[in-house]
Length: 190
Image (cartoon, helix red, strand yellow):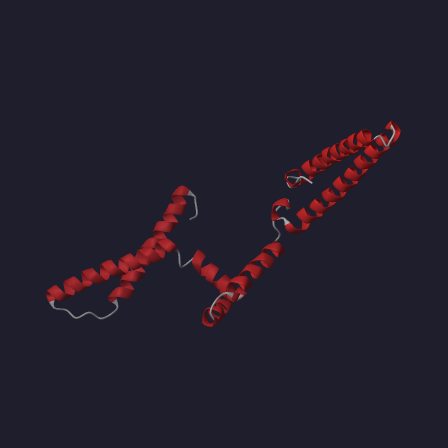
């Protein structure tokens, strides 16, 4: 059989098998005419039988390809993915990735992927630990610490240790305000 004709789509498979059946019937008819063993009526019956076999094969191939598409092919799926399917896929992927990790990494992964820890992390990420706020906090801590250090060195003061923490808090607040005003002006969440 010609594999190129059978591997495209179920509809193409049916058409290809139909053509293949007709070709086989034609080949059989030509062979029997050359030998001279069969009459014209027998030749037509053989041709018809070959066509019927090809149709049966086409139907069985179509049923098999349809059932394979339903069970194995994610591209054949229609509609939105349900919450349950999403959870099953997530757990399967997580388990596969964890099986490839070292023992300490796997243990840490299992701890941070507990539902309660994930939800708490997502809540903090959405409110307090915003990327712009964290970046502004780090930059603010650096700038304030550097400025206070240079001033203290020039005037001979001793640092207390709170400068870095205070600078981070000031930068963090500036970052939160930046995010807030950005959303107020543009209307888009980042």
